[in-house]
Structure formats: structure tokens, C-alpha cells
Image 1 (cartoon, helix red, strand yellow):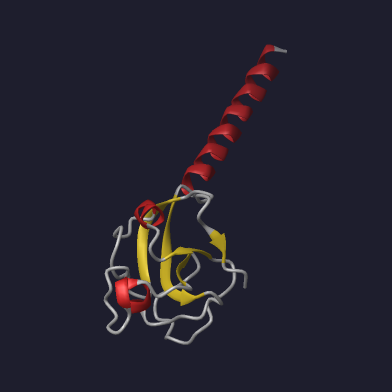
Image 2: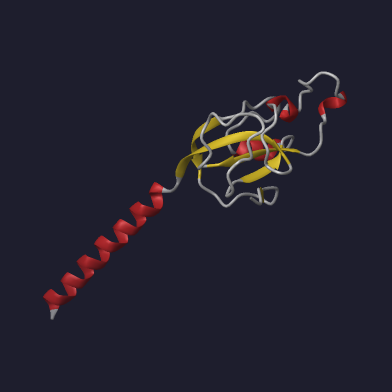
Length: 132
């Protein structure tokens, strides 16, 4: 009986170690970012520049624009493309969300920006689904 106990304990430890390793592989990943309107259609990234980078618009506020992000977004989608479903978004001027993804807390984020080693998380209350 004691050898059976040792065998089961060893098996359990190996399974537990494998499960822990699998979880840790999901801890970091690449995340792609795009400036898009409320429908998930990519627009010029100047619309998401809260430093007022776009001329003719006062106070740097454009309204209705978001930074969409997803590990499945690749770089190179052109302006006017509807982003694939499954991403999330946050207001372009949400400095806390920007910082949590390793982006500058204000200013312009180039379309197609990919941040590596983003810590996996479910997101804060300011994050919402892109809705498809």
C-alpha cells in the first residue's frame, strides 16, 4: 500500500506542477491597440490624442472614440476597417486604463501598436466589450 500511496502522490504532484506551468504561460501576452469609433471602425489615431493633436477641435476632446485592444489584433489594419470581434475598449482619455496596459497615460497611441508582455487580467470596470 505504501508504494501505491507514493505513486499516487507523485502523480498528483506532477499534474499539479503541469497545471501551474500552464497557468503561468497565460500570464503575459501581446496586445494590439487601435483608435476606433463606437462601432469598432478604425479612425485616424489623432482622434484618440487627448493632448489635442487634431487641429480644429477644441480642448482635445473628440467624443465617441476609444482605444480598442485584443491579443488577436495584429498591426496593419487600415483606417475604415471594422475590428474583429472579441476585443475590449476603453475611453481614449482614460489615463488609468492606458497605464495599466503600458501605454502613455496621455497623448497619441499609433494604430496597430502592439504592447508585449501585457499582464493577463480581466480588466477594470472601465473596460467594455467591443460588441462585435
